[in-house]
Length: 289
Image (tube, rainbow, N blue to C red; front, side):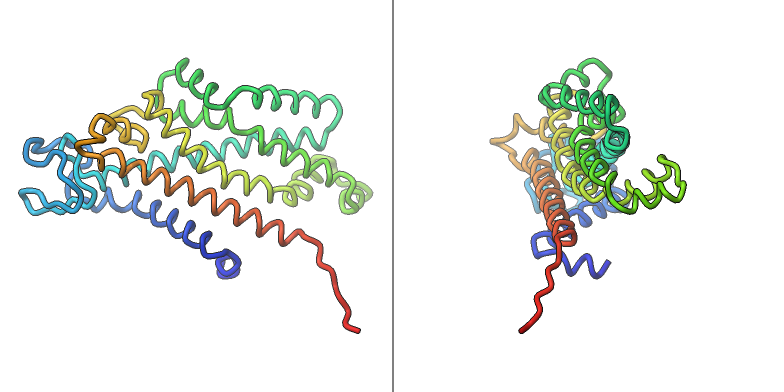
């Protein structure tokens, strides 16, 4: 772990710290909060308090309150549980589907490969946001629907990466050696080839977390994702859009959380990709005269 930390540049370290801090805050802050982030209290006295303001009971509201007098910081951390969990779970399921399809296609070749890649090309030809909107409109909005839709529309890139890696590994000496020793084709694929081909999939999954969080926020903003009273960053932004002039912090605070998460996941994914590329680059030995 220490070696991985030292191999990251400054921006990647900051991104990792930001993601860990957001995750820890999402887990701990709602548990330690003195008030229920979903409960509506004294609306008249506490609604739309600016950031860093104390209410009549002396409680400090770090990011202010919303139109119902609820603490925004606690609600953003509670919404982070849902948004981060949906983004991570959707990306992991998409990676699992893509890895399975790509591995089978790259290893089998022939008709199976052509059908799998044709399916991936067909789904890729349709804009993902359009697919998300159609699927979210067909089924009842909620966490399960968003996760399934993210997984069903995000596997194609991982499948292509895994397919290319597995197809290239078929001609490597260790595959021929395993075949000569009598190892079955399926065992060779899952025990020897696939573990060596997972690097690009890990990078794509890391990059996909930010994209999934952004798409989930967009669906929730449009009312097709996470439904109130369950908070998510998207529906919190939508809930404060009519207050953007009089109380801009209601929308800007969850919007900032989305931006930090997406940027941090993207930077961390790029750093991980560069690290894998550096490890796989050929080393040339130069002899001194």
